Image 1: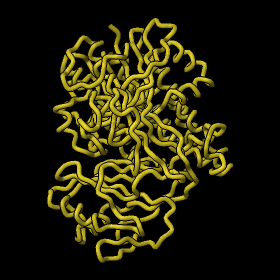
Image 2: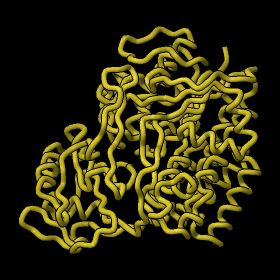
Image 3: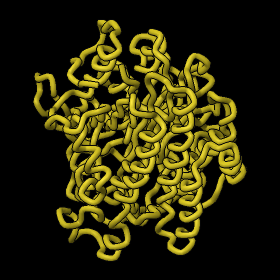
Length: 503
């Protein structure tokens, strides 16, 4: 039985994998030797990675596991619908985890060969402890780059990376690529967005070192760098087939034409390292729980959002100072507030019903998308597709909802807002600055040119196979039962997928 390594390359469909393979002989050969699948995300509420990956990892869809936002307390779901890494660990399979979403909910990391939680963790606990300083630096950089890649370096970041290099965690080639990135972004500020690729390569080296040392039977590695590039730069990278050629500025298209492929080159860098470090007794899986597709898009300069969460919450609560809550990590324009008292969460939700900016009133919902279409209703591969306006708008600009008694999630984004710089809360008119609101730049000159779709991808590369199978279609819920079958473990009754994937 081979070890299995799962590389979670977020949101990459088969079409993008093939486009990259056309310019990478290494990736072309890797795909040729692999079994390939189109995975259909089974979620019916909303398509987002922090929803789709729990479905993929737990073998049940969003309507069952109920995990809908970053910062949500996953303990209720963990007990009933555990993640695949916990299930395998509890059944005696050695497991290592690096970055998989919601892995930070694992309170006892000692039972894993290694545990490097996701970058949205509310803590910097890590196994082994020697990575704690690097994890703290990575979390700080993720917070600073919640929307735009930050061109600063979090405090202690340089020494944290240098410490990894001295102790042999990082390859010399990676250090040289980091140095080249820092030089290139000084010469061309548009290259700052490639810091996401640098973070992937640093984490990749750490992951490969952990693989080599601990040899787990199952391991995961998560990266979002390609998804981030596709969201912004799909139309530039695939200009010949883009629906947005006449809608986006020519100089913008030219400036960002290679960004998706640059992100995939970093993934290839990690993949080559995994293959070199893991040996020949390993099945390598590249998977995306959902995919992306191009949407109507235009260039945008900025958007209005929450820029001072303390000021915003103090206004909503009607207090001089905000207290009694924690702001949990999320991706701008989403904010997760966990209050010490359920009464404060009650009050926030009541007051948000009276909140508006211009004609945009807050809507109470965890389901932010305005419209969606159900495709294949009543079939095992039923899935949803979001509907988009002619300008690419697809979600309500201001939403809020609770995921438990103490946790409130607020999303606020108004692209290129041109109305008065004020909000309304009941009968009060509040200047943006007083309400903790303000404009945030779209540093790359665009919001999104691609958005989530249900069609993801799974690539299974098994030792000794020189010709993979033809493309097959499976449910994203099939991964867990397939892996349990591979490890000869009993199938829990709650799983909804089929053991259709061969490892």
